[in-house]
Image (cartoon, rainbow, N blue to C red; front, side, top):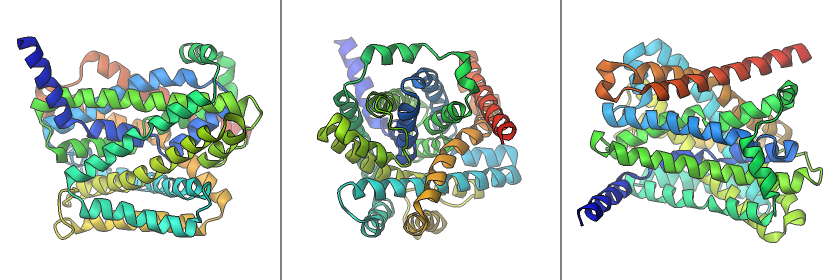
Length: 418
Protein backbone atom coordinates (compact mmCIF):
# COMPACT_ATOMS: atom_id res chain seq x y z
CA UNK A 1 0.00 0.00 0.00
CA UNK A 2 2.82 2.36 0.85
CA UNK A 3 4.47 1.58 -2.49
CA UNK A 4 1.24 2.35 -4.39
CA UNK A 5 0.71 5.54 -2.41
CA UNK A 6 4.25 6.67 -3.21
CA UNK A 7 3.73 6.08 -6.94
CA UNK A 8 0.35 7.82 -6.85
CA UNK A 9 2.02 10.86 -5.27
CA UNK A 10 4.74 10.84 -7.94
CA UNK A 11 2.21 10.60 -10.79
CA UNK A 12 0.11 13.45 -9.36
CA UNK A 13 3.25 15.56 -8.92
CA UNK A 14 4.28 14.83 -12.53
CA UNK A 15 0.92 16.00 -13.88
CA UNK A 16 1.15 19.07 -11.68
CA UNK A 17 4.40 20.21 -13.33
CA UNK A 18 4.05 18.66 -16.82
CA UNK A 19 3.98 21.23 -19.54
CA UNK A 20 7.14 23.32 -20.06
CA UNK A 21 9.41 20.40 -21.05
CA UNK A 22 6.85 18.59 -23.20
CA UNK A 23 5.68 21.79 -24.91
CA UNK A 24 9.17 23.15 -25.60
CA UNK A 25 10.41 19.89 -27.11
CA UNK A 26 7.37 19.52 -29.36
CA UNK A 27 7.40 23.09 -30.64
CA UNK A 28 10.84 22.18 -31.94
CA UNK A 29 9.07 20.16 -34.65
CA UNK A 30 7.83 23.36 -36.23
CA UNK A 31 7.45 24.24 -39.93
CA UNK A 32 11.20 24.72 -40.31
CA UNK A 33 11.95 21.48 -38.50
CA UNK A 34 9.43 19.53 -40.57
CA UNK A 35 10.98 20.98 -43.74
CA UNK A 36 14.48 19.96 -42.65
CA UNK A 37 13.40 16.43 -41.70
CA UNK A 38 11.42 16.09 -44.94
CA UNK A 39 14.41 17.23 -46.98
CA UNK A 40 16.68 14.88 -45.03
CA UNK A 41 14.49 11.91 -46.00
CA UNK A 42 13.87 13.05 -49.57
CA UNK A 43 17.50 13.88 -50.40
CA UNK A 44 19.40 11.26 -48.42
CA UNK A 45 16.94 8.48 -47.62
CA UNK A 46 17.89 6.89 -44.30
CA UNK A 47 21.42 8.36 -44.19
CA UNK A 48 20.53 10.93 -41.53
CA UNK A 49 18.56 8.68 -39.17
CA UNK A 50 21.72 8.01 -37.12
CA UNK A 51 21.59 11.63 -35.89
CA UNK A 52 18.37 10.96 -33.96
CA UNK A 53 19.93 9.03 -31.05
CA UNK A 54 22.85 11.38 -30.22
CA UNK A 55 20.70 14.50 -30.71
CA UNK A 56 17.98 13.05 -28.45
CA UNK A 57 20.53 12.38 -25.71
CA UNK A 58 22.01 15.86 -26.15
CA UNK A 59 18.54 17.44 -26.20
CA UNK A 60 17.57 15.71 -22.93
CA UNK A 61 20.78 16.88 -21.23
CA UNK A 62 20.52 20.47 -22.47
CA UNK A 63 16.80 20.81 -21.67
CA UNK A 64 17.23 19.22 -18.24
CA UNK A 65 19.97 21.72 -17.45
CA UNK A 66 17.58 24.61 -18.23
CA UNK A 67 14.76 23.09 -16.19
CA UNK A 68 17.14 22.60 -13.26
CA UNK A 69 18.48 26.16 -13.42
CA UNK A 70 14.96 27.56 -13.55
CA UNK A 71 13.76 25.45 -10.60
CA UNK A 72 16.81 26.18 -8.43
CA UNK A 73 17.37 29.89 -9.16
CA UNK A 74 13.82 31.01 -9.96
CA UNK A 75 15.23 33.08 -12.83
CA UNK A 76 15.19 32.84 -16.64
CA UNK A 77 18.33 32.10 -18.65
CA UNK A 78 18.59 35.60 -20.14
CA UNK A 79 18.19 37.07 -16.65
CA UNK A 80 21.03 34.90 -15.29
CA UNK A 81 23.34 35.74 -18.19
CA UNK A 82 22.78 39.47 -17.58
CA UNK A 83 23.46 39.14 -13.84
CA UNK A 84 26.55 36.94 -14.20
CA UNK A 85 28.17 38.25 -17.40
CA UNK A 86 26.95 41.84 -17.75
CA UNK A 87 24.54 43.80 -19.92
CA UNK A 88 26.89 44.24 -22.92
CA UNK A 89 27.30 40.50 -23.56
CA UNK A 90 23.61 39.94 -22.89
CA UNK A 91 22.65 42.67 -25.36
CA UNK A 92 24.82 41.18 -28.15
CA UNK A 93 23.39 37.73 -27.46
CA UNK A 94 19.83 39.11 -27.55
CA UNK A 95 20.41 40.77 -30.93
CA UNK A 96 21.59 37.45 -32.37
CA UNK A 97 18.67 35.53 -30.86
CA UNK A 98 16.21 38.20 -32.02
CA UNK A 99 17.40 37.98 -35.65
CA UNK A 100 17.38 34.18 -35.74
CA UNK A 101 14.06 33.88 -33.95
CA UNK A 102 12.43 36.35 -36.31
CA UNK A 103 13.54 34.15 -39.22
CA UNK A 104 11.92 31.23 -37.39
CA UNK A 105 8.69 33.21 -36.85
CA UNK A 106 8.52 33.93 -40.59
CA UNK A 107 9.02 30.20 -41.16
CA UNK A 108 5.99 29.38 -39.00
CA UNK A 109 3.74 31.70 -40.97
CA UNK A 110 5.04 30.13 -44.18
CA UNK A 111 3.97 26.79 -42.72
CA UNK A 112 0.51 28.16 -41.89
CA UNK A 113 0.07 29.64 -45.36
CA UNK A 114 1.33 26.65 -47.37
CA UNK A 115 -0.45 24.00 -45.27
CA UNK A 116 -3.84 25.69 -45.65
CA UNK A 117 -3.23 26.34 -49.35
CA UNK A 118 -3.24 22.56 -49.72
CA UNK A 119 -6.93 22.75 -48.79
CA UNK A 120 -7.60 25.62 -51.21
CA UNK A 121 -7.50 28.45 -48.64
CA UNK A 122 -5.64 31.64 -49.74
CA UNK A 123 -2.79 32.93 -47.58
CA UNK A 124 -4.05 36.52 -47.69
CA UNK A 125 -6.98 35.36 -45.56
CA UNK A 126 -5.44 32.59 -43.46
CA UNK A 127 -2.24 34.34 -42.32
CA UNK A 128 -3.96 37.43 -40.78
CA UNK A 129 -6.67 35.26 -39.16
CA UNK A 130 -4.14 32.83 -37.65
CA UNK A 131 -1.93 35.72 -36.51
CA UNK A 132 -4.91 37.20 -34.68
CA UNK A 133 -5.74 33.81 -33.12
CA UNK A 134 -2.26 33.26 -31.67
CA UNK A 135 -2.14 36.87 -30.44
CA UNK A 136 -5.49 36.59 -28.65
CA UNK A 137 -4.59 33.23 -27.06
CA UNK A 138 -1.46 34.61 -25.40
CA UNK A 139 -2.50 38.21 -24.67
CA UNK A 140 -5.92 37.42 -23.23
CA UNK A 141 -5.26 33.97 -21.76
CA UNK A 142 -4.04 33.09 -18.29
CA UNK A 143 -0.90 30.95 -17.93
CA UNK A 144 -2.81 27.78 -17.04
CA UNK A 145 -5.29 28.09 -19.92
CA UNK A 146 -2.54 28.94 -22.43
CA UNK A 147 -0.51 25.95 -21.24
CA UNK A 148 -3.48 23.60 -21.67
CA UNK A 149 -3.94 24.79 -25.27
CA UNK A 150 -0.23 24.27 -25.97
CA UNK A 151 -0.30 20.79 -24.41
CA UNK A 152 -3.29 19.82 -26.57
CA UNK A 153 -1.42 21.04 -29.66
CA UNK A 154 1.60 18.93 -28.64
CA UNK A 155 -0.37 15.68 -28.86
CA UNK A 156 -1.46 16.45 -32.45
CA UNK A 157 2.08 15.56 -33.56
CA UNK A 158 1.02 11.94 -33.39
CA UNK A 159 -0.42 12.49 -36.89
CA UNK A 160 3.14 12.23 -38.25
CA UNK A 161 3.59 8.81 -36.68
CA UNK A 162 0.45 7.61 -38.46
CA UNK A 163 1.56 9.26 -41.72
CA UNK A 164 4.94 7.52 -41.43
CA UNK A 165 3.30 4.12 -40.90
CA UNK A 166 0.97 4.67 -43.89
CA UNK A 167 4.01 5.33 -46.09
CA UNK A 168 4.99 1.63 -45.64
CA UNK A 169 8.70 2.27 -44.94
CA UNK A 170 11.48 -0.30 -44.99
CA UNK A 171 11.41 -0.85 -41.23
CA UNK A 172 14.51 -3.07 -41.03
CA UNK A 173 16.68 -0.74 -43.12
CA UNK A 174 15.43 2.31 -41.22
CA UNK A 175 16.15 0.68 -37.85
CA UNK A 176 19.64 -0.33 -38.95
CA UNK A 177 20.38 3.18 -40.25
CA UNK A 178 19.30 4.61 -36.89
CA UNK A 179 22.09 2.76 -35.08
CA UNK A 180 24.78 2.61 -37.78
CA UNK A 181 26.27 5.94 -39.02
CA UNK A 182 27.27 6.27 -42.70
CA UNK A 183 30.85 6.07 -43.95
CA UNK A 184 33.07 9.10 -43.35
CA UNK A 185 33.03 9.81 -47.10
CA UNK A 186 29.43 11.05 -46.70
CA UNK A 187 30.68 14.01 -44.66
CA UNK A 188 32.75 15.25 -47.61
CA UNK A 189 29.50 16.11 -49.36
CA UNK A 190 28.73 19.76 -48.50
CA UNK A 191 25.00 19.20 -49.00
CA UNK A 192 25.06 16.32 -46.52
CA UNK A 193 27.08 18.34 -43.98
CA UNK A 194 24.69 21.27 -44.39
CA UNK A 195 21.77 18.94 -43.68
CA UNK A 196 23.44 17.44 -40.58
CA UNK A 197 23.89 20.95 -39.16
CA UNK A 198 20.29 21.75 -40.05
CA UNK A 199 19.01 18.62 -38.28
CA UNK A 200 21.04 19.40 -35.14
CA UNK A 201 20.07 23.09 -35.30
CA UNK A 202 16.37 22.39 -35.62
CA UNK A 203 16.42 19.64 -32.96
CA UNK A 204 18.36 21.62 -30.34
CA UNK A 205 17.47 25.23 -31.19
CA UNK A 206 18.83 28.13 -29.09
CA UNK A 207 15.36 29.66 -28.46
CA UNK A 208 14.24 26.46 -26.69
CA UNK A 209 16.58 26.97 -23.77
CA UNK A 210 15.33 30.48 -23.05
CA UNK A 211 11.66 29.54 -23.38
CA UNK A 212 11.89 26.41 -21.25
CA UNK A 213 13.66 28.07 -18.35
CA UNK A 214 11.28 31.05 -18.41
CA UNK A 215 8.28 28.67 -18.46
CA UNK A 216 9.65 26.70 -15.52
CA UNK A 217 9.99 29.94 -13.55
CA UNK A 218 6.55 31.27 -14.52
CA UNK A 219 4.90 27.93 -13.70
CA UNK A 220 6.42 28.19 -10.24
CA UNK A 221 8.42 24.93 -10.32
CA UNK A 222 10.88 24.80 -7.41
CA UNK A 223 13.48 22.34 -6.13
CA UNK A 224 10.66 20.25 -4.70
CA UNK A 225 9.09 19.71 -8.13
CA UNK A 226 12.40 19.34 -9.92
CA UNK A 227 12.30 15.52 -10.27
CA UNK A 228 8.85 15.54 -11.85
CA UNK A 229 9.89 18.43 -14.09
CA UNK A 230 12.91 16.42 -15.23
CA UNK A 231 10.60 13.57 -16.24
CA UNK A 232 8.49 16.10 -18.18
CA UNK A 233 11.62 17.11 -20.11
CA UNK A 234 12.72 13.54 -20.84
CA UNK A 235 9.28 12.40 -22.06
CA UNK A 236 8.95 15.49 -24.25
CA UNK A 237 12.41 15.07 -25.83
CA UNK A 238 11.86 11.39 -26.65
CA UNK A 239 8.39 12.00 -28.09
CA UNK A 240 9.51 14.88 -30.32
CA UNK A 241 12.43 12.93 -31.80
CA UNK A 242 10.26 9.85 -32.40
CA UNK A 243 8.03 12.16 -34.47
CA UNK A 244 11.10 13.51 -36.31
CA UNK A 245 12.23 9.94 -37.04
CA UNK A 246 8.87 9.10 -38.60
CA UNK A 247 8.93 12.24 -40.78
CA UNK A 248 12.35 11.28 -42.20
CA UNK A 249 11.28 7.66 -42.69
CA UNK A 250 8.01 8.63 -44.40
CA UNK A 251 9.81 10.89 -46.88
CA UNK A 252 12.57 8.34 -47.47
CA UNK A 253 10.00 5.62 -48.21
CA UNK A 254 8.12 7.75 -50.73
CA UNK A 255 9.95 10.81 -52.05
CA UNK A 256 13.53 9.48 -51.99
CA UNK A 257 12.64 6.12 -53.52
CA UNK A 258 10.69 7.80 -56.34
CA UNK A 259 13.37 10.42 -57.01
CA UNK A 260 11.39 13.40 -55.68
CA UNK A 261 14.18 15.58 -54.24
CA UNK A 262 12.93 19.13 -54.78
CA UNK A 263 11.21 20.12 -51.51
CA UNK A 264 11.13 23.88 -50.98
CA UNK A 265 8.46 23.97 -48.27
CA UNK A 266 7.20 21.36 -45.84
CA UNK A 267 3.84 21.49 -47.68
CA UNK A 268 5.62 20.15 -50.80
CA UNK A 269 6.33 16.96 -48.88
CA UNK A 270 2.66 16.59 -47.95
CA UNK A 271 1.57 17.15 -51.55
CA UNK A 272 4.12 14.69 -52.90
CA UNK A 273 2.91 12.05 -50.43
CA UNK A 274 -0.60 12.07 -51.91
CA UNK A 275 0.04 9.96 -55.04
CA UNK A 276 2.75 7.89 -53.33
CA UNK A 277 1.24 7.06 -49.93
CA UNK A 278 -2.45 7.86 -50.35
CA UNK A 279 -4.95 10.50 -49.25
CA UNK A 280 -4.81 9.62 -45.57
CA UNK A 281 -1.04 10.12 -45.31
CA UNK A 282 -1.38 13.39 -47.25
CA UNK A 283 -4.14 14.74 -44.98
CA UNK A 284 -2.36 13.69 -41.78
CA UNK A 285 0.90 15.31 -42.93
CA UNK A 286 -0.89 18.52 -43.97
CA UNK A 287 -2.94 18.77 -40.76
CA UNK A 288 0.18 18.07 -38.70
CA UNK A 289 2.04 20.85 -40.52
CA UNK A 290 -0.73 23.37 -39.85
CA UNK A 291 -0.90 22.43 -36.17
CA UNK A 292 2.89 22.61 -35.82
CA UNK A 293 3.08 25.99 -37.55
CA UNK A 294 0.23 27.59 -35.60
CA UNK A 295 1.62 26.17 -32.35
CA UNK A 296 5.14 27.46 -33.00
CA UNK A 297 3.85 30.84 -34.25
CA UNK A 298 2.57 31.30 -30.69
CA UNK A 299 5.66 30.02 -28.87
CA UNK A 300 8.58 31.50 -30.84
CA UNK A 301 7.56 35.16 -30.49
CA UNK A 302 6.82 34.39 -26.84
CA UNK A 303 10.30 32.91 -26.35
CA UNK A 304 11.85 35.98 -28.00
CA UNK A 305 9.85 38.35 -25.82
CA UNK A 306 10.94 36.43 -22.70
CA UNK A 307 14.60 36.55 -23.76
CA UNK A 308 14.71 40.26 -24.55
CA UNK A 309 12.66 41.39 -21.54
CA UNK A 310 14.61 39.31 -19.05
CA UNK A 311 17.90 40.48 -20.56
CA UNK A 312 16.90 44.15 -20.29
CA UNK A 313 15.17 43.79 -16.93
CA UNK A 314 11.59 44.41 -18.13
CA UNK A 315 8.56 42.67 -16.66
CA UNK A 316 7.55 39.57 -18.63
CA UNK A 317 5.13 36.67 -18.41
CA UNK A 318 1.85 35.34 -19.77
CA UNK A 319 0.42 35.57 -16.26
CA UNK A 320 0.74 39.38 -16.34
CA UNK A 321 -1.75 41.79 -17.92
CA UNK A 322 -0.85 43.96 -20.93
CA UNK A 323 -0.65 47.03 -18.68
CA UNK A 324 1.69 45.21 -16.28
CA UNK A 325 4.17 44.09 -18.97
CA UNK A 326 3.66 46.46 -21.95
CA UNK A 327 7.13 46.00 -23.50
CA UNK A 328 6.76 42.21 -23.35
CA UNK A 329 3.37 42.22 -25.10
CA UNK A 330 4.25 44.92 -27.63
CA UNK A 331 7.36 42.99 -28.71
CA UNK A 332 5.27 39.81 -28.97
CA UNK A 333 2.73 41.71 -31.09
CA UNK A 334 5.39 43.26 -33.35
CA UNK A 335 7.02 39.88 -34.05
CA UNK A 336 3.69 38.32 -35.03
CA UNK A 337 2.60 41.24 -37.24
CA UNK A 338 5.98 41.57 -38.97
CA UNK A 339 6.39 37.81 -39.44
CA UNK A 340 2.94 37.40 -40.96
CA UNK A 341 3.32 40.48 -43.17
CA UNK A 342 6.61 39.31 -44.69
CA UNK A 343 5.04 36.03 -45.80
CA UNK A 344 2.45 38.03 -47.74
CA UNK A 345 4.93 40.33 -49.53
CA UNK A 346 8.17 38.36 -50.08
CA UNK A 347 8.46 36.10 -53.19
CA UNK A 348 8.53 32.34 -52.60
CA UNK A 349 12.21 31.76 -53.63
CA UNK A 350 13.40 34.22 -50.97
CA UNK A 351 11.15 32.66 -48.37
CA UNK A 352 12.82 29.30 -49.03
CA UNK A 353 16.20 30.81 -48.19
CA UNK A 354 14.85 32.30 -44.95
CA UNK A 355 13.54 28.89 -43.89
CA UNK A 356 16.76 27.00 -44.59
CA UNK A 357 19.17 29.57 -43.21
CA UNK A 358 17.15 30.10 -40.03
CA UNK A 359 17.55 26.39 -39.21
CA UNK A 360 21.27 26.27 -40.04
CA UNK A 361 21.95 29.48 -38.08
CA UNK A 362 20.25 27.81 -35.11
CA UNK A 363 23.03 25.21 -35.26
CA UNK A 364 25.76 27.84 -35.63
CA UNK A 365 24.56 29.97 -32.69
CA UNK A 366 23.75 27.01 -30.41
CA UNK A 367 27.34 26.51 -29.08
CA UNK A 368 27.47 30.07 -27.70
CA UNK A 369 24.23 29.51 -25.76
CA UNK A 370 25.49 26.14 -24.49
CA UNK A 371 28.75 27.69 -23.26
CA UNK A 372 26.84 30.29 -21.23
CA UNK A 373 24.63 27.55 -19.81
CA UNK A 374 27.57 25.36 -18.82
CA UNK A 375 29.37 28.22 -17.12
CA UNK A 376 26.23 29.10 -15.18
CA UNK A 377 25.13 25.62 -14.12
CA UNK A 378 28.58 24.74 -12.79
CA UNK A 379 28.71 27.76 -10.45
CA UNK A 380 28.49 26.43 -6.90
CA UNK A 381 27.39 29.78 -5.47
CA UNK A 382 24.49 29.84 -7.95
CA UNK A 383 23.39 26.18 -8.06
CA UNK A 384 24.66 24.75 -4.77
CA UNK A 385 24.31 20.95 -4.80
CA UNK A 386 22.48 21.08 -8.15
CA UNK A 387 25.53 21.69 -10.33
CA UNK A 388 26.15 19.40 -13.30
CA UNK A 389 27.43 15.86 -12.87
CA UNK A 390 30.57 14.88 -14.73
CA UNK A 391 28.51 12.87 -17.26
CA UNK A 392 26.24 15.83 -18.04
CA UNK A 393 29.26 18.10 -18.48
CA UNK A 394 30.90 15.62 -20.86
CA UNK A 395 27.76 15.25 -23.01
CA UNK A 396 27.09 19.02 -23.09
CA UNK A 397 30.70 19.94 -23.93
CA UNK A 398 30.94 17.22 -26.58
CA UNK A 399 27.71 18.53 -28.14
CA UNK A 400 29.17 22.05 -28.17
CA UNK A 401 32.46 20.96 -29.73
CA UNK A 402 30.77 18.75 -32.36
CA UNK A 403 28.39 21.52 -33.47
CA UNK A 404 31.29 23.99 -33.71
CA UNK A 405 33.30 21.44 -35.70
CA UNK A 406 30.44 20.77 -38.12
CA UNK A 407 29.81 24.49 -38.62
CA UNK A 408 33.49 25.26 -39.27
CA UNK A 409 33.83 22.30 -41.66
CA UNK A 410 30.74 23.39 -43.59
CA UNK A 411 31.85 27.05 -43.81
CA UNK A 412 35.37 26.06 -44.83
CA UNK A 413 34.05 23.65 -47.45
CA UNK A 414 31.64 26.29 -48.79
CA UNK A 415 34.49 28.85 -49.01
CA UNK A 416 36.80 26.43 -50.81
CA UNK A 417 33.98 25.27 -53.07
CA UNK A 418 33.01 28.86 -53.84
